[in-house]
Length: 458
Ligand code: AMP
Image 1 (tube, rainbow, N blue to C red):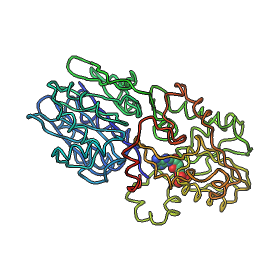
Image 2: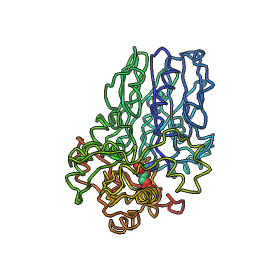
Image 3: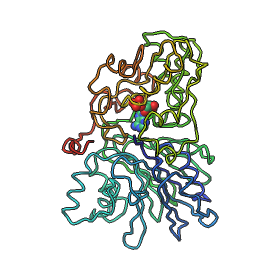
Image 4: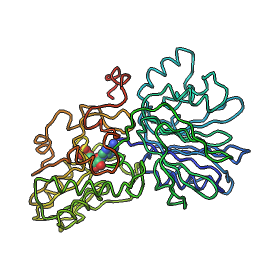
C-alpha cells in the first residue's frame, strides 16, 4: 500500500538546508520512497534528491556548505507515476537561464488528457509525474509575468494539488480550489515556512499562523507575503487526513488531528452496539481513537499489541511474500493483556481487510475470549482519485461485501464502523466541506480520465 506525499517550503531563514532537512524528517510518515530539496542563497541553487528515507538520502550532505536562505522540499510515496529515480521530487527545470522547481502533494484527475494534448503538441516528458505536466502548462502560457503564467497553467488543472514552487526570487505555496490536501503557513525566524502539516514547525521552532486557503496562491519573497486567488470551487477537504494520514501532533485544515481522532473515538463509543472489558488500539493508527473510546466507555485502555519501531522498508522486503510474517514483524501480541478477556480492538480503517484478518488470528492464538472491532470511520467502498492511495474498487473489502460478511472474513465476534454522520460530527469543520468520496462515491471533481483508464487498475 502506498501513502501520500509531503511538501515544505521556507523563505528568509538562516540555514535553509538544515531546516528543510528537519522538516522533511517530520513529514516522513507522508512518504518514504524518495525525498529531496532545492534551495538557494540568492546566488547559487543547490539540489539534492534521492531514493529512500530522509535520514539516508541526506546522510552524506555537508550542511555547513549549503547555507541557503530559501527553498522547497518533498517526501514521496508515489500516487501517480511509477516509482523510479526519475520521478523523485522536487521536479527541477531551467527556463530562460533561471531555475524553477516544484513539489506536489495530491493527484490530478485530468492528467491523462492534459499529457496527451501536450504530447500531441510535441512536448517531451522526462518523468511520468503529474507534476511535470504542471510545469509545462505554466511555461506554455503566453502571459509575461511568472505569476500570471502560473495562474494560467493552474486554471487548466482538475483535482488535488497542494504545491510548493521554487523560483530564484522566492517561493509559492498553492492549494487547489477544492482544497483537498492540507498546507499551512508558519512564521520562522525573520521569514516563513509552509508545510503539509504543522508538526514540521514544532521541531524547528516555527509558529503556526494559518492554513493556506482553497485556491490561494501565496508568494513569499523579499517584500513579504502576497496572495492571489484561483476561481472558487466546492471546498472538499480530505477527511482521511484526520482519520489516518496526518500525524496526531499536527494541525491540518486548521484543526488538531489529535482532538479530531479522540472525538472520533468518543463518538464511536456512543454508537457501539457491543460491550467489552478492555479497549486495545492497533498501534499507532488506532491509538488516539481508542483513548477516546475507552474514556467514554469507562473501561481500561491497554496496549495488547506492541509495535516494533525499528522496521525499515528494506528489512521487511524479503518477508513481503509472507504477509503473515510481515504483519507479525510489525506488531506483537501481549497475551497477558488479552487472555480470557472480551476485548474491543480499535482500528482507524479497514482497506483490504488482509492485515486485520492476520492480527485477529494472532489475538485468538494468544487466548482472547471475545474480540470485537470498532473502526473510527465508515466502510471504505470507493477508490480515491485525489491523492490517497487506496487500491482499486475490487480490492477494497467493503466495496462488495456487507458488514456481516466482512466480520466473518476477519474472524470477529462483532464489527462496528462509525457512521458517516458520527464521523462528520467529530470534526469541527463544516460537514459539507469535506470530501467523503471513499465512503459515499460522491466525487466532487469529475474523474473522467480515470473512468477511461479502468484497465490500468486504478
Ligand atoms: P487492512 O486490514 O489490510 O485493510 O489494513 C488496514 C490498515 O491499513 C489499517 O491499520 C490502516 O491504518 C491502514 N491504512 C489505511 N489506509 C491506508 C493507506 N492508504 N495506506 C497504507 N495504510 C493504510
